[in-house]
Each structure stands twice: as structure tokens, then as C-alpha cells.
View 1: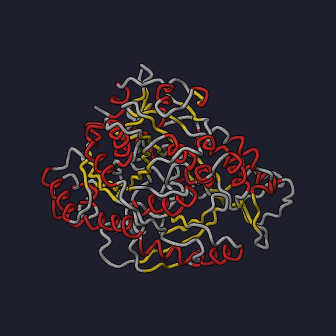
View 2: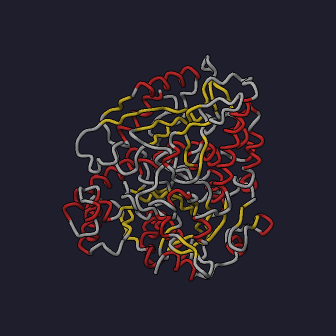
View 3: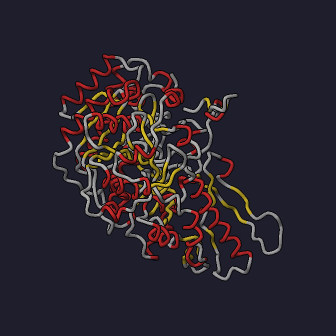
Length: 552
């Protein structure tokens, strides 16, 4: 049975009843129908409530189709609830780009899903659309200001427009070609909305006032003297905050097993910081005894940014990290051709273990956090492969469980949930990879060598110039967000095994002053993805019964 059919067959609980499970009252919700709601309860009202335990789910480097990290996260939360624990999910919102592209939706799969899956995967409560509108309002205000005389003396505009779809045609565009008087044509670019700085700002803001302040601090351009021009110089932060007044409120939905899930914010991990909102995570920690959250793609991207960027603002680190591994991804990173990863091959599997061991070392030794490995079972996995992988990890005293949440829901993750509970009280020795007072280059070097396994970092001239510029402006004490391919530890998506020594090449640097971090672009990373040769959009349709088909 397809995911959408499983989800549709499930009878949903009224969201009021889901809210009651985590002690939320009806007047603390804004309803979007019977099964979705915005949570209006403020964290300040819960300040005397003890935080729950934080469980971060990450993974090894994925294949192009992903490794089921969200499915595992959902199954863990359901299994913890089945074991009698008060557990809440705190996940990201899906972007329309992957939904209509190659990966499909991001609501889990099989019998471990968040629902209503069609709504969540499509327009949901309109949060990403609000971010798109706020982003493009700012772009419009910039060009309108220039049209009416350019009082702020823009010499260079650095703010880009955005769209929540994959469209490579928009990576480089010409704007202002109408030949109207005072319109200044220029080369420009679009980002996908989830790479917008406004998405990062929404996800890292404490409340509406903090949001407004951070929006005002966005650097939108520079004068001829390289003096920064801010969004607040255009008096843009107020109107942008108005567009985001509902988007900043976390969304409450449910799992197929009728457990609470807070879904809010959705920055990509390969081009942004890859985790859900600060507000949602903080709220979940006050409402639940256990919070299951995830960080995008492999531990080198999502987990590193969760720990080095988000945790500094969260002022709390995960109590345990679950690293999701799949047989097919291990074989893929062990040299197996993509078309053969479903065939049994212990040789490729053994070679691919290098990738898993590296991520375990990063989390356990570099960050100092407890680790459990979840082997996400697929129906193509053989018993030989599963037994081999389990035995290899046990020999190294690494806690490991096979997770089959896709086929069995919570029942398939009971062992994993029990393993988490058995290890979550162990002492952590959490530490950041870098100190904020390190130089920009030192911060990047520490990430590259300890997290990416690189030998060194090479900088192109454009990146060096930007580093020099940021240092002169005095913003060099911010965290680093590296935009890099998700498919490899290196910056080369084809270097899957990473057997030989390699360097990381930084091609550009960008200051995201409103979000409070510096982006370093490694390799040929694009902030506006393109569609594959056969996009998922070709299979998505609506039938005569007004039912969506082909969404996965």
C-alpha cells in the first residue's frame, strides 16, 4: 500500500484531543480545520517547567532518495508513547521543491507518518508562502527605493528574490528590463524559499519582537564606500513581521498513532542550517518529557549546524543522538553503483562502514554526545546484511537497533526506543567544534578537518575578499553555516568513498547578519535547485473524487 493510501485510510483525531495530551487548552490554539492548529501558548508562561530530554535524529550521508530519517523520528516518538512516555515530535516543514522534484514529501512513510500528509506536504498553514512574501516584499522595497532617487545610495544590492519551487532557470536572471525611466536593470538571482535568510531568521528568533529586530538587521546592500545598508534603513522590518505574524507560531498535527507532532520551519541543511524552529523546540521541551527532533541530511551537515548554530541559541544540547544508517546507503558509499544498491553485497557494505564510523566519531568524540545507531530496515535488505552490520557495531560497543517503523509503526521501533531510554541518562561531555571568537578561517578549518575529514581548506579570491570585508565590518564572531553537497563528506558529490586525501574549496562567503551566521559556499552548491529529468510532479494528480494521487 502506498504512503498516501495508508495515510488516507487512517482516521484522524480532532486536533483538540491531540493538544490535550500535552496539556494545551482550546484557547491556546488557532485552528486550520479539524486536524491542524497553530499553538499560541507562549514559552514564557512555561518558564518554571523543567525541560524534557532532547533526542536528535541524524544520519550517514544519504543516497539521492534519502534514508528515512523522518520515518525513524516518527516511529521513535510513537514507540516512546507506546512505552508510556510523554513524547513529542518537533520536525521541519516540507518544501514544495523536493515534493515535486526527486525526494518527494517529508512526512515520513508507511506506518510512521505525520498527518494530514497531503496538507503538510503542500501548502500546510502557509508558513513558507509567508516567508516567500516577506522576502520578496523586501526586494520590492529595495528596487522601489532606488527608483525614487536612491537616498540610501545603493551601489550594490545583495538581497535576492525567492520562490518555493525547484527552478534552475532562475539561478541567474536580468531584472528591470522594462526601459521605464529611473528603473535600473541588473543581473540578479533567485533562491529557493527555504534558503532565504528570512527562513533562517524565523527559525532562530525567540518571539515576534526578536523576529522584528533580526529582520531589521538584514544587510540588503552596500554603498560605494562598502558601508552596509540594512532592512531597517528602509523601515521594512515592521511590514515583513506583519506578513510573518502567523508563520512564527508553531504548527500542531499528529502521527498516524495519534501522538502530537509540532512541525515548524524548514531550512535545507545543504544550503541553510537544516533544523526546525527554536520556538517549536523550546515549546516541545516544556510540553513533553521526551522531544524527538531531526536535522537534515547527514551528520556532517544537519547535525553539525544543529549543534554549532542552533544549540548556542537553544542553550541546551541533545541528551542523545540517533544516527540513522541504511544498508543501501552504506553500500552506495562503499562503491556500489546506485542501480545495484538493493542487491546483497557484503563487500560494499563493509567498505561503506567507514562513512558510518566517521559520523559516529564526529558525534561521540568531537561533540561529546551519546550515540545510538538505528538501522532503518528496507524490504530489500537481507538477513545476512542486517546481521553483519549489527555484529560489526556490537563489536565496537556501539548501541544499535534495527528499526522497522515503515512496515510496523511504533511496534517496529520499540527496541530502538528502549535502546535510547537505556542510554539517554549517560553523561555527555558536549563541546562545540569551534569557539565564536576563532577567526572565520579557523572556524571553517575546524569544521572541514574534524567533521568533513578534509586535509585543508582552499579559498577562491572572491571568498577571501568577503572574509576580509566581514572582518572589517566586525561581524567575524558569528557561527559558520557551510553550504555543501549532502552526498559526500567532501565538497564533491561524486566522491562517495572519500578514500584519498582531499581539500574543501570555499568559493564564496556571505554574511547573513539578520540570521546571525556566516554562510560559506563549498564546491558547486546551488541555492536554487533544479528538477530531475523525471520530476515527481509528472506523477502527481487529482482524481474525479477530488483525491490527490501520486504524492509520496
